[in-house]
Amino acid sequence: MNAIDKETQSEIEELLPWHAAGTLSRSDARRVEQALADDPELARRYELVRDEFGETIHLNETLGAPSAHAMEKLFDKIDAEPARKAALSLSFTARVTEFFASFSPRTLAYAGSAAAIAILLQAGIIATVLVKEKSAGGYQTASTSSNDPGVGAFTLIRFAPQATQDDVTKFLENNKLSIASGPMAGGLYKVRVSMTALPKSDLAALVKKLQENKIVGFIATTE
Amino acid sequence: MQVLFARHHVRMYRFVLRLVRNEATAEDLISEVFLDVWRQAGKFEGRSAVSTWMLSIARFKALSALRRRPEAELDDETAERIEDEADDPETALAKKDKGALLRKALSGLSTEHREIIDLVYYHEKSVEEVAGIVGIPAATVKTRMFYARKKLSELLKEQGIDRGWP
Image 1: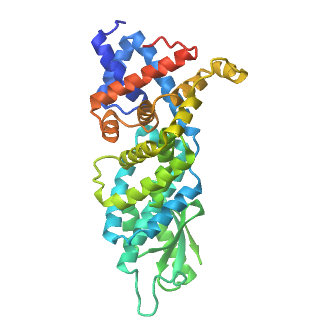
Image 2: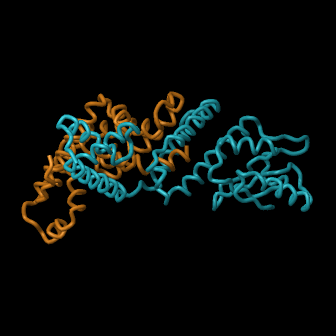
Image 3: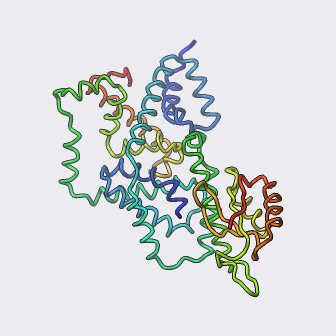
C-alpha cells in the first residue's frame, strides 16, 4: 500500500468525521474509502474519529429528555396564540411530510424507535385528515351530524407502517370513511364506515373488503 | 405540532442542553424553539430538513440565553470544569475507561467546538447543513471541526491519553 500525498491526506482527513457519520456525498465517500485503503496512517486516524463519533452519541444519549412540563408549557403558549388559519397549518403539515423523506440512513437505522416513529407518523397523517375534515365541516346528513362520535358504524384500523399521508387520505376518501378518534394504544384508530348503523353481515363484508387494501395493517369491527 | 414535538424534542433538548448546560434553561428554550417553529411554519421553505431548520432556531436561542447569563454563573461553570490535579479513586478508575475520558473531554470543549462536534456526530449534519445552521462557510466548518478534534486530543493528553494525533 502506498501512502497518499500530504495535501490529499489533509483534505481527506478533514472529511473523516462526516465519513464516520455517513453524511458525505457518494463521490466523497468513495474518495475517502480509497484513501483509507491506501494510507494506513489515515486509517489509524479514522479509528480515532470513530471513537469520537461513538462517544459523542453515547454522551448525548445519556443526557436524558425534557420533562412533560416542557410540552405542557409549549402547548399552553400555543393555545394563547391567536387562532391560526387552516391553510397555513395545512401548508405546514405538507412541509412536515418532506422531512420524513430526509432522514439519514443512520437515523433510520435506530431500529428501536422505528416502530414508535411509524405510529407518530400515522398520528400526523390522521391529524391532517382530521384538520381537513374539520375545515370542510365533516360529512353531513339531513338528520345527523357526522361530528357526533357515537353515530354510525365503526371499525378499528391500524394502518401499515409504510402508509403515506396520501395513501391514507385517498383510502379514506375513496371508501367514504372518516376518523372518529385515535390514535389509541397500538396505533389504532376508530374509523366511521357508515353514517348509520349497519347490519352485522354488511359490516363484516365491508371490513373484509377494506382489509384487502395494502395500507390496512389491521381492521376489526367495533361499537 | 404534537408529531413534530414528539419526533424532535429530545434531540433539540440535548443540543440546547449541551450548549447551555442547564436543564431548566434547556427545557424553557426548547418550548420557545417549538413556539417559533409554530409561528414561522409558513416561512419554512423546505429547502433543508426540518431538523436543520429547527437546530438553527435552537442554536440562536441557546446562544442568546448564554449571552444573557450572568458572568458569575459562567465562571462557576468554568470552575466546575477545571480538573483536579490529584487523581481520586473515581478518576483513577475512569482512566481505565478510555471512553469515559473521551466523554469527559467532549464535555470540556468550548461552546463553539461542542456544537460542531454534536452537529456532525450526533445530529448527523453534512458540511453544508452545519454551515447553514452555524452561519459560516463550508470550508470553515471543516477547519472548525478539525480544530475541535485537535482540542479534544489536547484535553485527552492532559488526562494522560496520547492519541498520537495531531
